[in-house]
Length: 462
Image (tube, rainbow, N blue to C red; front, side, top):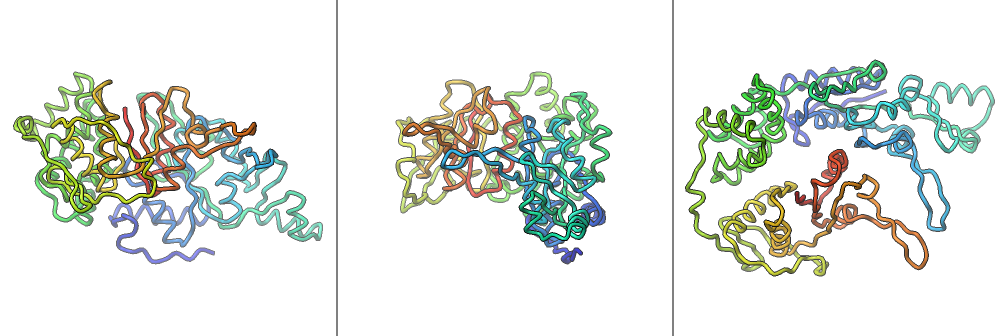
């Protein structure tokens, strides 16, 4: 039924370790018989493991990012409007995966409300589902039984609203362990009965060093200290410090390693300060973290405050800010490139150099600062120097996932739904500037998790 491909040494960012290979083999065993759920801390590589397993099986995947306000109707079918004004039901990615035999990856099952998950019980246990438009999905056995019993064709069954679930369809859920602080345990008896559960443990120090070495070469002394700090925080007895360990997950360590490989002149203390946003931590937590950092021999370099102003300019299509260079983008959408009045401030130029470095590495950016310090000005000037067209969206407390993707508007007396700035940025490869990112409910930011798979960059301002 399934024909797994032999595992490759490295695919899509996956580096083999003994523990991960063992977990993939266990997942493969579960995959052949039932749906399963992979639970592990944030940034430990759950999505990479699932995608690697799907690649070995030669299967296509359908990524479905779950969010707190998602309803059962969103999970099954959505109501949409045609150009002539008719409203119709449209299959969700989950139903499409069931009909086409893909792997439906439910990313973030710990976020969704338990009442929404209840709609999956019949689909998981019986491979049957009643859709909102009256159609029914049946397992291959029930479908064939009905076909033989009434001696009717596939076309007749389809016309009567009976659809067959592909026999190779599987559901893989991805979630994080229940939090002891919130006191909310999403792993209720009802959820536990849905899946076979597998645990993706945080990688050991040796495994993380092996992955970093495989991708970015020999580990430098500064990076070695950051790895030591990460594992010191994970095993710390102080709950405040242990909660900060997520800032140095395996995913974040790989980002830091990527940056240090290309920009080895970075100050180690500045890197840690930017990673933890130490200036914005509560005073007691910040003091405890600074003490831990100093015990590892990492101290602040006061000489950075005395640096001379950076020089910048564009020569032959190459933008240079300080010691960092990048090609200027060629675009036909010149009207979307910012053009502002900007005064060169040394501190802002140094910040723009760091933004340019991370931008060159393909990272999405978050700019955090107090009100009125010029965050929007810096971003606009940065994009102006790069000649990058932008899309702009401002969030607020009533922002929902729907308003982030579709914008209703009236034209010539007709209500039409246009693409939001987020969708336009994905379609045309523009830079998306998200202003007031801290104003919207945090669970809505999960939408950007799926958006990061596309070839565009977003800059959030908070």
